[in-house]
Length: 69
Image (cartoon, rainbow, N blue to C red; front, side):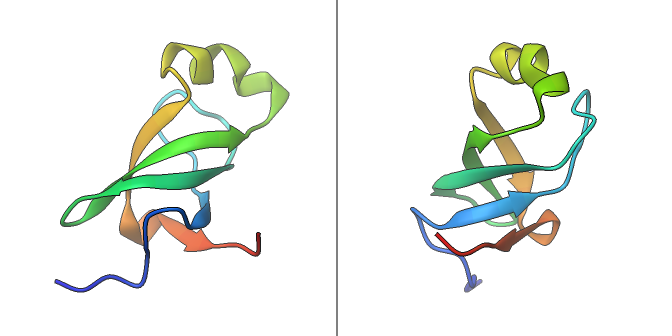
């Protein structure tokens, strides 16, 4: 399956699990229906959760969109 995303793309991701706000990240690895994203910008309220996630998250491709660098 081809995807419109590439490694290194900057993406806005929808909140999920314990995160209470959307966040911005960079794609590190692409899987079949999801991608490993390094979280680079997030709401201050989510700092503890992001730290627990080690600044990474696996996000469904349908829950992200590209943003300008």
